[in-house]
Length: 395
Image 1 (cartoon, helix red, strand yellow):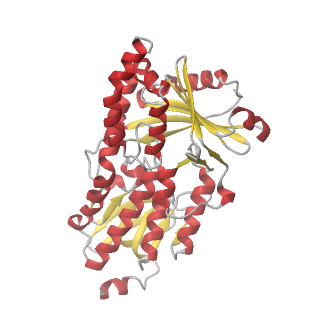
Image 2: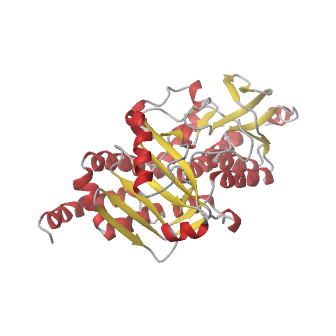
Image 3: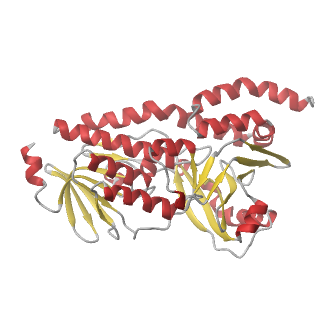
């Protein structure tokens, strides 16, 4: 451990460098610093930063967070959902909040501030250009300088520079393409249209949906699904906005969402990947924040363990992947399988599911981490034959 103390006297040497100041990165950096590790958090953009995201935080994500959000961050609280598939519509409300609306710029800045308060050094506007593993540690070169660290946690998104050092990029089959736009509206107008609910409109694109999320003074609208259909996405997005009588004079921005197929490790010697960089996203809902926070926390705990043992090899860091997979892999794989089956037969399956209040209510439980997706999927498999028969025979 003496060598570790000697390294820390150099301002450019760290125990842990986290690349990317999103939910995964800020969570990991904060946890590392709180456990006594000299931690640097690198972010390529200024903070607060723009992030293409609908900005809906599930109750499950809030549980992973471990602390309450300040009220000034909350744009709205939604207690229900309007689900649409073709001509089938169903609106189901619970007696409590099922999703908390935020702006991602404000939410991410809050998490990075929490990391800074915990002792993390943050360097914004520093783009990670290269990551090289050496005997003495991991050398990280940015647009500003060079750093050396015992461990690097890559939380730098779908195009992760850190991931490129040891694994192939995501395949087209693992990618979903989205278009999003913020549509300004007076608060009174939003209260009339979407006072306390979100809208999920299926059928516009394979392996995805279009959505409307209400904020204080604008509606976050978007559409996303299979990467192979990205060429037609803008036209479908405009059709969606027209259907809901929203402003068509918007300039949507695109982004990619990664869905891991679990064929590549998310760790190697001295390196771990978290959040989108690892592809930890729910395929059916598109939710990534919950899994970003969880993976960031587990990566940090693994980094602390590695420093205690003074061993940064893949044999030690393997426990990170094992722990995350133990908690979430089955759920994420069930989500992917359900997506492929449901979207293959959208009218028959998705339409049938949407008609049933209990299907939506139990899905709220999944999003609140009260029910695992695996348990939900098994329950739905048992219920589906009866649902289909009742629909066919009109009962």
